[in-house]
Structure formats: C-alpha cells, structure tokens
Image (cartoon, rainbow, N blue to C red; front, side, top):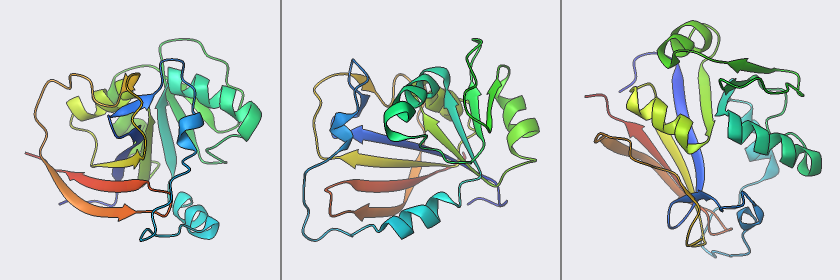
Length: 188
C-alpha cells in the first residue's frame, strides 16, 4: 500500500485487443455507440470533478503531437493542468502550462514531479508507460477498455521485460460499454 500522498497513475484507453491507437493514429473509435443497460451513467459534472483531482499530466512527444493536432478540432483535452512532455526533440510549445523535459526518468520524478504535485497522470503513450513501469515509478494503472477490436495498431504493453504483480482496486462498467479497471502496482 502507498504510504505518501504522491501518486503516479498510468492511464490508457484501449480496444479489447489491447490497442491504444490505429496504425494511422485516428481516434474515431473512441466514440462508442454501444449501450450497456446495467452500466453507470457518467455525468459531465462527475467527469469535471474527477479531472480537477489531477495535478499534472505526463506524456511522450508523439502523444503530445497527436494532442496538439486533435486540439485544433476538439480543443485542448488537458485544460489548464500542467503538462510535462518527455522528449529529446525540440517541439513547439503551443499551450500554456506545457513544459518539455529531457533527461533521467528517476530525476524527473524526484526533482520535478514529487516536490510539486500529488496526483500525476501518465497520459500516453505506450513507450512512456513502459519506461515508468520498467523503472518501478508508477503506483497504479487505470485502463479503460472500449467495446471494439481494432485488429491491429499500437499495443498498450510492449515487451516491458519483467513481471509486475497487480491488485485490482476498482472496476466500473459504463452505459457506453466502456469498462474501467484500476490496478494498484504492487511493490516487490
């Protein structure tokens, strides 16, 4: 069990076959048309209140570039919450609150995240999630499985290289057919 009030969550939405993106990075499949009669109705107020508990987002450069592209049509999905982009490339910073970071992941967590934030969300992509898992820096995984099989694309988990024991903390099924699972990462 976690002893401090600092938490790093890896959050990912995936298809049932574990894909987080189509080969062309299109996201139309996020709009589910499924209806699950026994599911929970998630109100906009509930979503807004929950998102306010996130102090900082962390993402990789490809996720950031995709988020920028999508923001032109849908708006910036991360609001005013600080966003840290892990990259070795010189990317444009087009949003207030976005900062680029290049360097050691342990140092990033101990010197940038831990002193400044309580609830950090690793919001993508699979390479960043893999590095947080490999380094033992994440506390939980929040996986939202959408009711679709993509049949190919970018998998969530790729060759992490070690076994990681988990504890199921919560599971919810929504009216949209999305199932959200929250797993605590057990520290061994």
